[in-house]
Length: 353
Image (cartoon, rainbow, N blue to C red; front, side, top):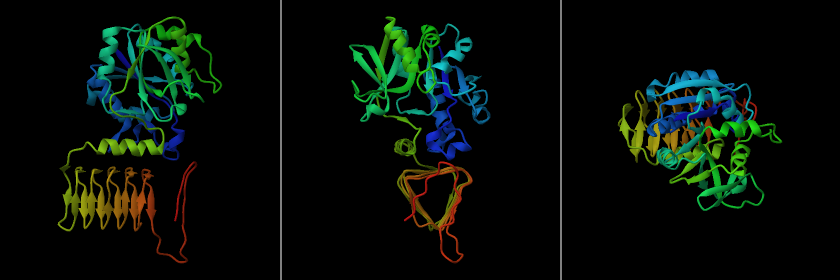
C-alpha cells in the first residue's frame, strides 16, 4: 500500500499567513501540521508516500526532504494548479500504479491516527473506504448517506443534509478510482471533485464503505479550527524543560520548554509550549499557547494563541485567540500623539478595543 498526501492548496482561509508560508507547515504545538500526517502514515505501516505539491512545493520539499526522519520514501508529484482532489488522484496514477493507496489531506489532524482505518480496508477489501466524523454543522462539509455498512450517496455542502456524517479528508482506494476520476466532469468551480468520483463508483455498483472516526478530528484550514487543534494537542503533552527559567518565574501546569528557551520574571501557565531559543521576559503566557522558535516576548500577556518563529511582541497588554505570523512585530510605540500604527497584508484581520 502507498500513501498520497495532498499539499498543493493555497490556504486562502488562513491568509495573510499563507501568503508567505504553506498552510500545511503552520505549527500545531510547535510541530508543522503536515508532520502529524506523516507520522500517522508511518504508524499505519506505510513507507511509500507521494506528496502532491503546488505553488509551495519548495517549502514542502525543504521541510520534508526525502522522508528520512520518518523512515519514509517520499516522492513529489507536481500539480500545475489546484484543480480538485480528484485531479490530484488523476495525476498520481503513474506513481500509484496498481497498488491500493490512502489519500490524506495535508492539513488534517486526527487524534487516533489511521491505523485502524487501514487495517479495516485490508481486511474487507472494498473498492473505496471513506473516513467520516459526526459534526454539528454538516451543511459546511461533504456529507455521506449510509445504508448499513455501505455509502449510498455523497453530497457536497447540502442545504438539507441527510446525515451528520462529514467526509474527514482521508480516503482509501483501489485502482478502480482512476477510471472514476477520468469519467467525471469539472464542477461549477472548475474542479474535479473527489465526491463526484466516489459517487461514480457507487453508481457503478462498486463497494464503498464507511469508517467513523474515534476521537477528535480537525480540518485546520480556518483560524478557529487551527487554535482548537492546538488546544487539543496541548491537552495531552507531558512537561519537560531544556531551557533556562530564572527564580522569579512561576510555572503552573504542564509546560514544555524547548532547547535554549529563556524565561525571566514571568508567569507561564500550561498547557503550553515555548520553542527553541525563544526569550520571554516580564510576561504572562497563558494556557493553550504555542510559541515557536526564536520568538521574543517582553512585558506582554498572551493566551490561547499560536506565535510563529522570530515574532516579536513587546509592551502589549493582552492578546488571545490569535495567530501571529513569522517575523511579525507587535509593539506599543512610545511616540506622541498616541495612535495605532499598523502595517498589514492582504486578507488580514485586526481587532482593537
